[in-house]
Each structure stands twice: as C-alpha cells, then as structure tokens.
Length: 172
Ligand code: AMP
Image (tube, rainbow, N blue to C red; front, side, top):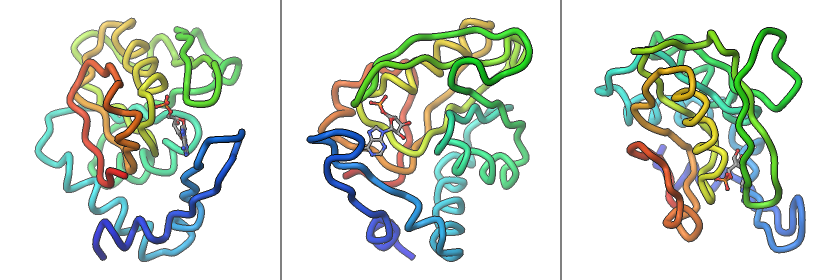
C-alpha cells in the first residue's frame, strides 16, 4: 500500500469542528486492518534509525498512532493529556491550535533529564499542539529528538515553529 492509497482512506469533513476547517478524519482509515497496519509500519520505518527512549503521544488521536508504534519499536509510551485527566503531579502548557485554545499536561515524573523523546500526533497543522508537547518534555529536563505525524498540512505547517526535526508520512 502506498502513502497515496493510505490518504485515499482518510475522509475529508468540511467545516468541522467549525466553518472553514477541512477536518482530516482518520477513523475511516484505521477501521481497515490493512490500512492501519500500513500506517504503523510506514511510520516505524520513518523513525527506525533515530535514537530515542520514549514516544510521547498527544491526546487523543496521537494515541492511535503512538501506542502501536511504541509497542512495535519497543519504546516506552508517555501520555500527554488534556487538563485534569492525569492523577499525579503534572506540568502544564497552554497553546493555540487551528480551531481554538487549549492546554496540555504531562506527569512531572513521566520523563527525566537525559531521556530522549519522540513526540507523536496524528496531524501537524500550525504546530501549536506539538510545540506545547515539546515544551512539556523539555520542562522536566528531557530532550525532544523529533516530532512524528501521519499527516502534515503543509499550507499551515510551513509557519510552524517546532524546535526539532519533523517527520511526516503524508504531506497534503
Ligand atoms: P496544530 O496545533 O494547529 O498543529 O493542530 C494539530 C492538532 O489539532 C492535532 O492534534 C490534530 O489532531 C488537530 N487538528 C488540527 N487541524 C486538524 C484538521 N484539519 N483535521 C484533523 N485534525 C486536526
């Protein structure tokens, strides 16, 4: 399966969650076993030569990508969540995204100084979400070695200000 074929399984939903946003709906891709497997296999290949200890996956669609990838690559999985969900002490970052403002939290002891982390999400748009995730990892002293996405919206991501190399499977 090619990247173009994977893209053909991703549904475009106009004006969601608000007018003017073309939402890339991956549910139509991941419900097909062959497509989901191809997505994870391709992404694993993209980062197989990188040296890192953990995947930090961003709630919630980042988990769909990050969890199977961590399992496949034998890495630890770090969960970055929306506010108020994590039970222990957290660090917090506020950020803006394509359609609003939000915050992310991570357990303070999730990673430590010297740990190498790959930040993973389903889609890169303006980069605000991934940038906040990178800041959380750095706040506790760990290093972000890269950011990985299934989809990159190039019209928006060209203005993204991510502090690390960006890896994406499909640019559209
Ligand atoms: P951004 O912070 O602008 O890079 O937005 C990326 C985050 O918002 C990711 O967690 C995406 O899941 C979500 N997102 C932003 N724009 C879209 C879109 N057009 N389609 C699907 N998800 C999106």
